[in-house]
Figure 1 (tube, rainbow, N blue to C red):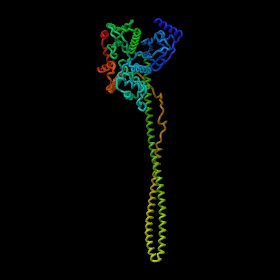
Figure 2: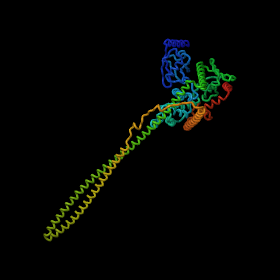
Figure 3: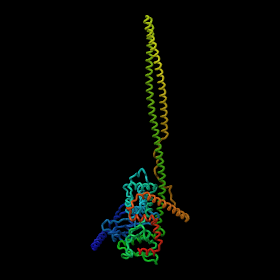
Figure 4: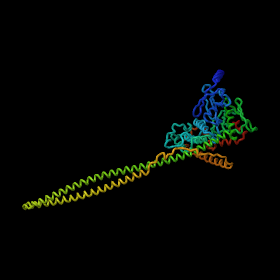
Length: 590
């Protein structure tokens, strides 16, 4: 069967070489790319092609990984692609990933694209629980991930529920507490709101700065055995080699920094590590799988080379990259300041516009109310005029009746001479007529007074109408005194002039440089203290909701380390203070 497989692989390789080209699919953290490659290409040429396509210059951190049976392997740079154990079917699928991790992301990662690729890979490892992350750190990291995606927090846009479809926390953390998705989102959003003013690159860098302090960050684990046959784990990272117990990947039992290792080699299943101290005992362990042994050696050599490279003066290329990065960051800082100033002016103009619109609406309401009052006054004046006219007509009618009564009285007096009875009757009628005349006169006077009063009321109504018209004219003049400025005057277009922006980066003397370094150290300590306080506050908030029966063994180990006050860096510092001889003896006694 093995011979058939070898024959098949040989036939596929022969076919590819005859075609003189082959297709490769490169899977990155964001997208896939396909290339047509020549059969003579080596791994280095393919990696350089991918890096050029991505605009990536820090190539020493990355590699091309592929699957071989039940393990993984990295493409060798000095060997032809088709001469390696890459997949046989085309296009050949390779994964472009970070192979080596920096010791300090803020100092070593220069390009934004490098930082972004590390951010995506570390975030994926945390969510898939390949890197153990405590709950309070998970919430803070999630808030920076949200800021990197959505920008500054805006309560009008980022309303409750906007993170419902986002995968932000490891499932282990979610299952560990009696908290709903809304409660998690509320805590993440509260931290997210505090990051206002940061760019996407700054948020990703803060994410990596927190993640690099996690115990499992950047560590590749492999199963090994010591001379006694005890099952152990070998951890390879940027600082050195670490030995773990199988059920505790957080706290190493012993460590060997790269600066204390002189040589690493393996023969079949046995690894040999020679310390720098020639008097110290050689460190040996067994790894049963040949492919895994090759992978261990490859990672050890690459990590050791980078460790030594960091402690040498930067190459001219790296110095140029760092200088360009500093200039680019300074340029972005100036642009961001100008943008913030322009944004403030725009917001101020919008506030002024809103205030003028409110004043205009208020004046329009006052004018409408004045018009309504004027209309009511006119209607009242018309009614009063009509009543006065009716009163005048009634007074005329009463005067006419009074005149008729007086004529009747004269006629009665003239006929009163007819007989005594007629005179008496006439006197009686005269008395009645007098009473009627007096009554008519009183009514006439009363009607005349009423008509006079109605005339007075009409005069007052017309004066009220005149006052209402005057007030309306005043309001109209006030409206024209506050015109709404046009938007093009208030909202100047965003524009940046490069003529007034210049950058001058000159070397200062050693005294000034030391002061700046000391200042940066103080700022770093203050930021670290603030970050620790923030993590402790988050832990206190959610501690009462923890379900301890759902804790994993790594959670128990992490809590135990936190109670003892130990951390990743304190453990490594403590272990590296031991002599190489004592560490080798301790490893063999495990």
